[in-house]
Length: 111
Length: 114
Image (cartoon, rainbow over all chains, first blue to last red; front, side, top):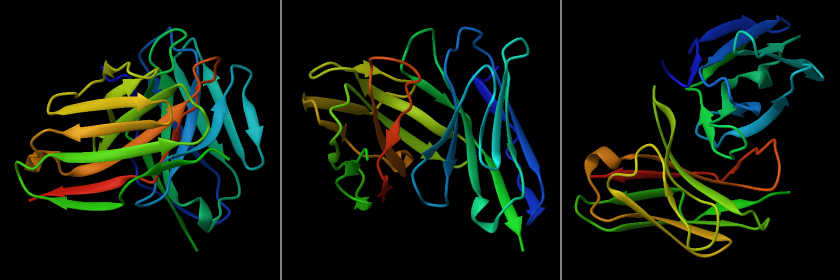
């Protein structure tokens, strides 16, 4: 089983739509979780950390379900500028600072 | 703002050449990482370093070596470049001290080996 698994997509959604991505991870000892965003031919950039209680940043909401070992990202009111690949990321082991990156889910927002 | 820079954006080398990729970060981060990114495979960790002169193998170290003589600089070396090392190479850095351990990336070097 892969450390981090994501649906590669692509997800093609109209502007204004709500879209959700899920990700599962295999290491139950993982402590930190993130969503990164990667634009075409650019480096990954941190979008948001994911906390057990869930967290929201504007139109973006991240949730963590430790029991089921999955992480979700919800984007409301999609904008054209949200088009990118979204990478699910988890730490490799307890207390460590190495990260496993998912292969990413590609989102295209259509006018 | 954290800044991670890489020596080249694009590089073309011939098979068998020795290739040096340089990465510099300006935030006094303890940890530095080298990844390669290929379509469908995502980011794969080649080597990382958690201190000066320290290095650890990642998932795919074969054919690569690294050097960290100064805290801010981490070099990736391809001893004898091969065509299967054609890829996007990304350097990243992070603090050790506490979670959540997010990593900051440089702009990447797109290496083509012919």
